[in-house]
Length: 168
Image (cartoon, rainbow, N blue to C red; front, side, top):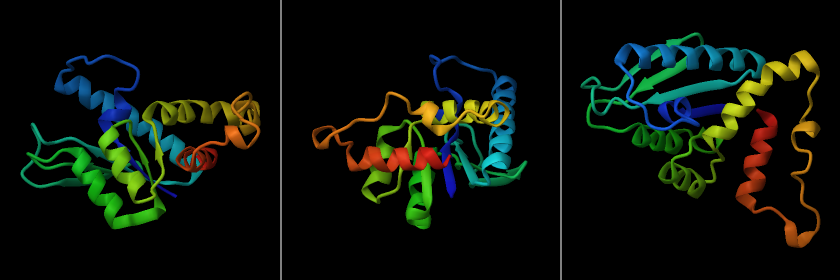
């Protein structure tokens, strides 16, 4: 499975907009890459993280690899959302997108690519080390979330997202 992650969207989950200095932002990006690298080792995933470079980036798109995570910084004048849409279009149904951006989510869902909201992925990423240490299982995680009966059946989009979440 290949994850395409909206970097700043995941980085800023659960907090209000705070202006960070460039060194603080770099430190937070490095922390996120550390967490994703540890998660990648546990789950054997391919991970691409896309960051915005449209306001203060380079003239061309910058790609690099850190700790097994592919990083893409969009070029000056191009938002990360456009890069993610392009990657989804190129790679097709073999990917899963992690974002809470509505525009990117709608685009991916039109192509039948599963989308995981950033806050749910953040929880999965934080729970993963505990699962290994404590034997925490999927059934514990989904307790109370299952619906029964045909009238309570989840939408196709929600079923697809849950199936992908189980694999993560």
